Image (cartoon, rainbow, N blue to C red; front, side, top):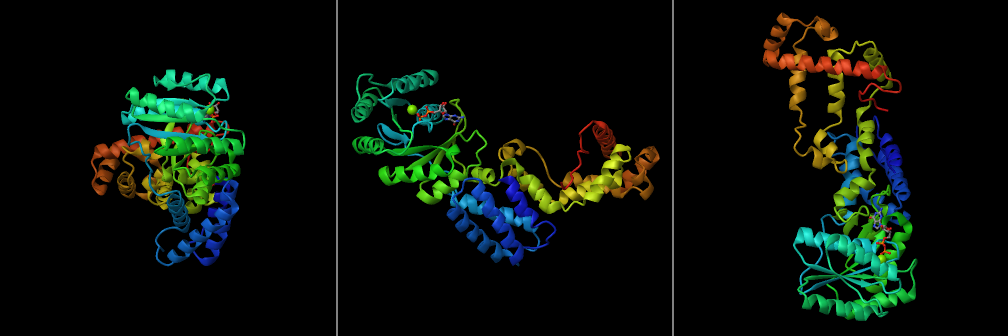
Length: 437
Ligand code: GDP
Ligand code: MG
């Protein structure tokens, strides 16, 4: 997907503002990209029509923002909006609250049941009970028992009973008698939509009147996920969706299609087989993922930096010869600045915002460095090795920073220069400097 989107934003490379023509071109690319990420064609078309209208509406207002960046923002906001905007909680009020788990066989119901119990116990201070209603496969009941033991949550099961309605009701009674405040009912699935399965699950639902019915679906099943989601919803009118197996390299297009088609909120995402890998659904994170995971930076960079290949080659040569100087450094800072607001760019990378929360990435560090370099003579800028104490003193005075600060920067510059030189000598290594690709 990211490659496709890269194409979309390449269209905007070098353009200084959004126009009807470049919007139309990039919208077409975005649509292709969404389809490639398993978003249904009709949905992708409607989605991009909305994006187009929004972009057209903004073409005159936001001259200051680079078009690539603006397009990313519009697409991102629209994705977030479509997927529900905010996090949707589950209803766990009641004595006990009852949560019914439905979905195809292999979608991850039993694993999710365990994860949910673990989550409710650990994060919400609940005392859950798991109920094993997958009566056709003894192995399924054992599987839930093993999970229950692992997370220290009791499992209600009846090895000799083939009636899931009865087991569910008795399970709930058991919970009431033993002070459990949430009951999670794990059910049987089939490999595909099947009338008997639907009848059984709707009977269970009818009988136990759950607070929440959650539909579990494997995100890796792509387009099929939407069809399954629709069939189940038509039949049991569930309250929310759980997307599993997002630890793979699926781009999450299913999240968009399901929300769009069925209109039910996605409440949880599951990312692995370990019990701790359950997360409430964050539309903004999913939007980043659909937009191309960690690659978003690189294509914004590409659209924005307009870095000239020629310049990149020249720079590489200079680094190889250990001739990287203060002018080159200034230019690099300028390139980074062209990308716009660093913080918001970095926040678009999934998982990155957490890591950089306490990091101070702002322009002031650049300002200081620039002031120091601007206080150098042209000769000094071209020949870093000329630096000596009297020059440093003069520079410090000129830029209004202390001699210690000037020294610190020069030392860092020297280290960086050495490092880049070293790296340029390693086989297969680039310069480490941003190159527009
Ligand atoms: P059920 O038939 O719907 O109950 O599905 P299970 O919970 O038994 O899961 C089917 C298979 O998928 C098992 O091998 C699970 O370990 C695996 N599984 C479930 N959830 C995830 C997930 O989020 N990520 C990965 N990688 N595997 C999962
Ligand atoms: Mg199961």
